[in-house]
Image 1 (cartoon, rainbow, N blue to C red):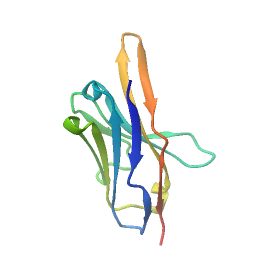
Image 2 (image 1 turned 180 degrees about the vertical axis):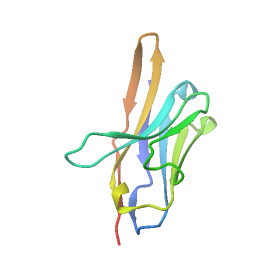
Image 3 (image 1 turned 90 degrees about the horizontal axis):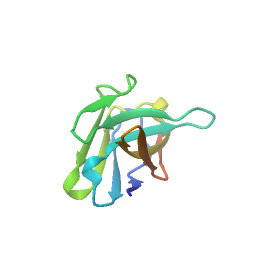
Image 4 (image 1 turned 30 degrees about the vertical axis):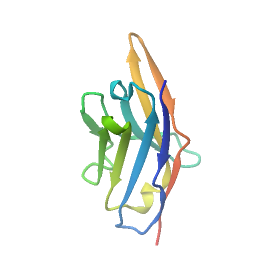
Length: 119
């Protein structure tokens, strides 16, 4: 089992940067695909970025070229470097740990961290 815990959210001005961290307890962190999602009130949670256990990354079109996802398997941590932030990036950001097993997938979510982009 993996328990993600996010940190690093806060208030930042447009054009600024933040780095989110997701520390995931568990001894098999390296076998999980790790993702960042975000959600604003009244809307569905959306994928921001994902990094697979093999290191392949994928990004939402809205953040390509601005956000970078990475992972440190030795420290069981995933990062989301967010640059050139825009007001529309304001949301609660959630860390997800996912491990496909056959036809099903284990899914674990963090509690979320608020990111507010405003002047």
